[in-house]
Image (cartoon, rainbow, N blue to C red; front, side, top):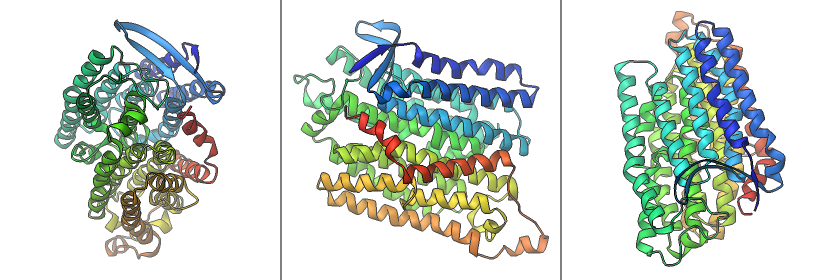
Length: 493
């Protein structure tokens, strides 16, 4: 591994944090505040992108922040896996910044300065997780993300919003403190280090480590990163939908849940390693365990009429694809799981952007009220249809690439049961996405709307352009998956 000592990863995180002060100072000047938010997002993405040539050449950036214990440092590392996540998150921050300006302005939301400031902190924390060189650093940024997103979840400051915020913190902080922190102590005690391994094969546990201890630590980590929303630790996510739509997009696509599955898969691959997981038979049982979440969450999504609620349960289901793929422990399965971090991000942010645009333009939240709405909002619902197709796994959109590799991975592992899960899940995806698109384009307008003479139209351009861009990227990834797959292949060394 070609290692480069560099301040670049620290500069990326610092640039995101530095946005906070000018955003707060520009609080009474919305145009300036919006410009600073967009400028900061662009700068952060440019800094991340500047590392692209070196990452493609197999180089790894490292930066030591501070020693904590012998063999345990606050330390950053930019490798292929972390770079993929950071690139997706920083690019989507640009789209979300534009969208949020349009959404918050159209609805005349209160406390917009607080919103944009904490949004920047959340992105910085997500980038910190992406660039963490060890479990200690990852844990620190993971907790910062939980705390910084609480004001966003509770943004409306209603009793319902505060209740959702409390539930959010109880789930996320409770599990990380109760499970991940003890796992961290056990790992350090028995290995003398918390650093991630240089490759995904052997992990960091010596051969003399008691198998029961390794299994215990693995279970603690699997349930400790509750941002992954594995059932039964998923309840925080639907409740958090009380937040404004840009926050929902942040939770589901840009940062929070992606940090959860990134942390889980990072630990699986770089702390335990493929060989250790195979030797202790941890992979396939994990794949079948998360399959329960994939199926059950999809069944619940079928019953939800509220659009954001249906999308929330879709997210719970789709996140477990990532863990399932990695748990197969085959090259194709791991590839399918990791590429879904990017594929799901672009497709799901499109869906939530569309949900917000629909609400701003028509004040409709329930699917049953959206009859004929697609004819009045063709760009929004066309983007929604593309993103839905991606979630289903149909070509030529990004989700097809995920399903293709997951099927290949299941075949490699000789797991017919996992293939059946993927087929059933795909049918359920069709069941809860197809009716939305059909109703929007082919159903008649609701009688109440005809009587009132209500006219629908597209949301502001600041909202429509980002959602169309995100949908377009999903198509491009589906047609040209090679670029992002380069970073996935980089994980294998």
